[in-house]
Image 1 (cartoon, one colour):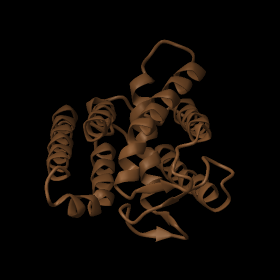
Image 2: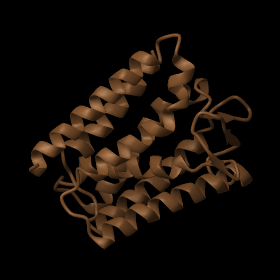
Image 3: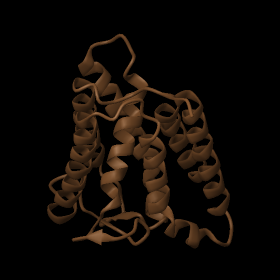
Length: 208
């Protein structure tokens, strides 16, 4: 299958999957759908991965690096509160290694590559691209936060979301985006851009 057709098919799969999830989360089967959240992130990653036009060693290294660093900063945040604030993870993001869901690294990969794909082709300085991508990722986190708390993805120990969380988000998001932009390992296509838009719509509706 030619790449444009494959990308269209992958985007359709994502739209269908998130639509089904959206409907399911508004039914009596809500809890069952919430338990499938890790698989949702895995499917999203698979669709994003297979939408790429090239599979260089550099790209694989960057994917792995962002996943590992993303997991690590979450570990630091949960165990020391030095990053993000005083928070912990719930039960609906799957298996936790030392209190941190393994899937959280995949989440950082998805957000980094999809948000950065939006700004990738813009004719502006690289640093500005990275900062805008960081703002996009932080804005998405702001939309996700209320849903995540209600869905037992994570919780804030004092019951409020600290501003410091967003400071850390924009810093690390911009840093990750700068890295993949500098190394030219991000790709702009209908799946990478579409995934970010789908996530915004999905969580915005759940916030209503």
